[in-house]
Length: 488
Image (cartoon, rainbow, N blue to C red; front, side, top):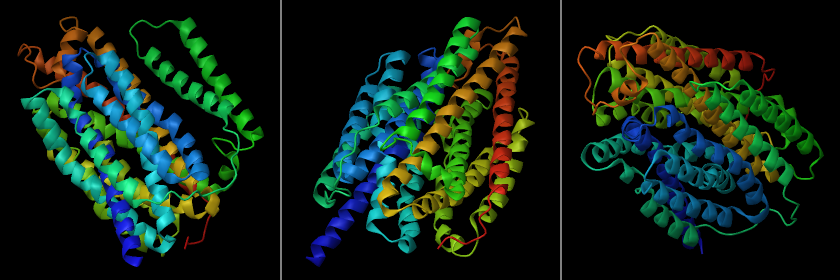
């Protein structure tokens, strides 16, 4: 009996490990391939939507899965999400154009909304608070491995095969996880009562996120339509007001506002949200910067992201001992200050900026995220009741996904506006030429290369200026933390 229990526990942890690897390797592979996808599909103006649509549907589905996992159990909900994610990955692999790729990324995101929060919740179910940090850190090794393999695999596929193949890797991995979960994880329900699903909350949350992303996309367009912008902004405002109204009255809200009455919980969510937004900046724009300005291959450009998850993995093993000795804000504030100083150098970087600094900054970023976001996860689970662990985990994941969703739109807006403005100031260069120049596989006239490099770097400066501002907001949020107790 004891042997069977240990075997089931081992199978479950292996499944969680592979599921984490599957979602993380998908990120490192697509960021490596993104410049090629932009160039091949003529999708510079739509590039942010390849990320944003995935994050949008992940954000919308995450709290739904979290709530259902508390009611119906972790196993069935995880399996449903896993199957949808695998299907979406396959469809992305056969996408013939940028528009269908964005659509299939939406399906992939609906499945991904279950994987991350429920893996966190399963770990919380299986291990006590004292042991949980080490298990979370152990699970983070999947990030480290994916960081090493992702850029190599992605770069090889882009350079030697076809970018469509970067998505197919998730299909066999999904099947392996499915088998392990079926045999290893129990299907015990966590609650006996079934409350009505908060459809009004789901609808208003979806409308809020969708309208916000459309607003960013419209603002970054070359032809601004003020009437449409006002309409979309109005939809966003009304849907946000409706969300708050419905959630206050809902019997079982999809976004339980009472959890946010706890200041410590709220600060963990906001910190994770903002840091996850910052994570998007270097994951997306480092490869673009290196391929377009330094003209390196997709493989080399992708490796610039590698130090982040590797350092995330190493740093996360220290979280358990840190939270037992130091209050949360005194962990977060020094780390954020160091990160902000490194990103400030990118605001002033020129074409001769040392390429090694991209690896250093990625490593510093990963170290900070590994400590702070793992701590955010631990504390947000600990300060709620046992019956709300699944919901708290989904709120943390929703916060992270919303941060990435919103900042994907913001960074895309800032980058596109900067590019459009710079192209307007250089009559000898067209937007189509800059679009092709993004990929190092594309040849350009030698006399135009310095101009296009300058145009792209100006866009990068503005992107990372926004990142520095985000670090400042994180500092302000944590300085407001009134908690003076160590969380044990």
